[in-house]
Amino acid sequence: MGFFAFFAFISIFSITYCKPYGKDHNVIQTYFRKTDENNKYIDRSSPDYENALAKPFINKILQSDAGASLKISPSVIENGGSVTIEWLGVNNSTEKDFVAFYCPPDDISTHFLDYFNVNNSPTWSKGFGKWTVTVYNMRTSCIFKYYRNGNVSQLVTISNELSFQGGPLSPLQGHLSLTSNPTEMRVMWVSAEVNGIVMVRYGTTKALEKTSYKSSMQTYFASDMCEPPANSSVFIDPGYIYDVLLYDLHPNTKYYYSYGTEGHMSAILNFTTAIPAGDSTSYKAIFYGDMGVDPYPEAVTTAKLVHDEVLNNDIKFIYHNGDISYARGYAYIWEQWFKLVEPYSTLVPYMVGIGNHEYDHVTGGEKDPSGAPGDGGFRPDWFNGHSDSGGECGVPMFKRFHMPDTGHSIWWYSYDYGLVHYIMLSSEHDYSPNSKQYIWLENDLKNVDRKKTPWVVVGAHRAMYCSALLPDDYIVALNMQRLFEDLLYIYKVDLALWAHYHSYERTCKVYKNKCQDDGVTHLVIGSAGRSTDPDIWFRKEWSVYHINDYGYGKLTVVNSTAMYWEWIQNKSKKVMDSFWLTK
Figure (cartoon, rainbow, N blue to C red):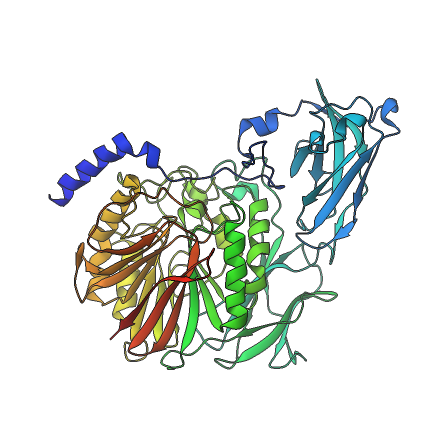
């Protein structure tokens, strides 16, 4: 069967059969990660979430409610800490009454971060109760408000203020990234706007002998993004993003560092600079995609296991090829995701690529920071990109991360590390011959010094090879093969890393759907936390191993003739698949 005949067949198959096997895009969890009576996440994007609350909100407390009180404890907590809300003396309470959470305290009534119904507490009908929630430092103080939910939402009582350790200027969401130079390291974090001096103190001892004051600062607004919900009333101030480049460092050297502003510095942490190109030192790195923060505890487990790897196995960097936080326009999820990875993203460089859930949009193309032409960017007829980013169109990614300046910002880039040349591509941008990305990729591959970096590893989000039975995505894979598989083959790429499918899979050395000794080994690693896809597969001779489960990959670069790959399953902590690549 020819390509176009098969393309027609698979299109018909997709229309006819795809619905039962479509990808699980999950609900948008609420800030408190609320669940219903069946223990399923309540969807923040559902109209029912807002419609459950009577309008308008009346914020003048009635005389009859003067005896009610709302208290939170503790009143000062750490980022991601728990707070207990206790109410007393509420008259005529109903099961629909709710307690809403506001940051800052004077935010408009309808712009709460989340709410919970008082009937979560078994004593609600008696006018008192308590409930505990997890909250994050939103770079301001916060309050809770109790509302009686009837024909209107009537304010009953207001809590004492909640504040966070370190306050608004506490440096949060820290992460490192490599540049193209092994004598450099980039440090980024978020806080409220600093009016004083921003700095990174660093050195080869904990005395932190040096200080860098050179920094850049940026933020973004709802109006910067392409579509709702990202540019609508659910937008939340992301704070100010600080970026400091440390330079004139020694390669492959351990440094201690602390970042922030005077009086609000991070703990003393450490990183190790990159191994220079051509240096034969053996090392390990971690690879995964499709993480997010829910469903619990999958991404949490991945983060804990990877943190352990970083602490105990001398991991050099993380390679996360798309679908990062799954915020999809709901900015508080970025806060939660960074809190999850910060324990290790501040110890090793965290290298990211763009996924459909960070970038894909249908309208608003003039705001797309990648500069892609068209209202929705790359949209050939066979491409199944929709409004998967929730209107973010790459803006939070573009602002929050700074990757090596060797290609086109965070969209595509490359870097050398020891004996390997790594490339991160964008599967959400044009990769057809004569496109900017294709021309860049060919030039980058053409100029790899295989004497210094004999190994070449390429990655992107969507997969060029995957046998999961998801026809719409399989059509995209066939077109990726058609448009740029030849480049990978001609320039002898050793390993190709993809995600998007929420599973793990390994191919043989393959070219044009045939196993052959000079082909490329492909891996699908979209197993870091998002709900797994249906466990149903095409039968393909090139598929060596696949599993629908959660886990991450680990690559050991042994020397110029050998690399070793392992995929570790989260629940067992066992290596479920491994192989050697040799030259």
